[in-house]
Length: 465
Ligand SMILES: [Zn+2]
Image (cartoon, rainbow, N blue to C red; front, side, top):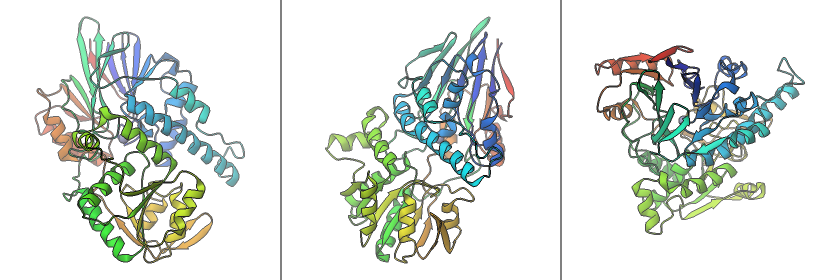
């Protein structure tokens, strides 16, 4: 019998892990960490539901930590098979997995210093840099559209998901005793149509069973294009006469901002300003975005063909060393500072906020989700002071939130992707969403006359045979 079991991202948005079993073999699609509330994060510490040594192969949809960040854990627990991913995902995982390990190590050190872990002063990190390196050594790149046997009886084909560089939907043909192979499709995180840099999500291949992401299953993004919103806020920041600080994720979001800033400058919708990218990871991620031409949309390629660097506003400066980063502090007048982390929980953006939040000419632009309790969330909720590096910093800057930026398709965009099926999949399971979004999405799928259900945590579904 062939089956698929939901080991995470069922009833929640993180911890993407789906175990596919047939004829005594098993393949794990995604190996994500649980993130967010403590109750979820504790699941990262629980023993894996099956012995990792018994897993024949892992197949990753993309490099985000909630999809790939548990691979170091699996390897440490005995997984010895290949972990397949697209070529760009491999390069991004080389950045993101060691970074995740460093964050885990930092958290353990902090818990020990403050004594808040019950294991203090001997709390251990979830995993360390050596585990991340061991996980990276298991990665095997597979280009889009190439059929590859990943384990006996399991054939993988990747298609573009348009979510981040290298992101893919996973089509698995699973051999069944006494029947045609079962066709399983895992959408992975689906991106936007018409977004910069990346091609649109590809129409899906036929499927007997579909797992579809549902992050925005009950919502639509603002109709205003991100470029228009960004132009408005850059010009307002220039009128205030100070810096525009954008705390942003180093991989994906900062490159999108660079693309749009260059485009807006070129069309004279914003003045040419000094733009600083102050995040070593963002500098590396930008180079990776430029190198993977197979992941570019036509606009990106046309620009490159005309000798235009798509991710380079005219007065761009990358700062790598701490000295270069500190020099940005001395810049007077309007400028743009793109720096991580996206929720201002750490990273170099803290120095810039500490220096410039008390200045009423400063603008802080929040372009990503801000989880409750983070500094980004406090800013969004009109905090008058912000605790940074042990100091209370007065907030006199203007704080603006834009919801126009998202790497996830909204309900209309996911519906457009579903329209691409020539025939309805036999069964559709909604995953990767909060409960209201999942229920709304399943209802929308049933309204098509399809079999739409919400995936239940740890449930196994028969693939027949
Ligand atoms: Zn993602």
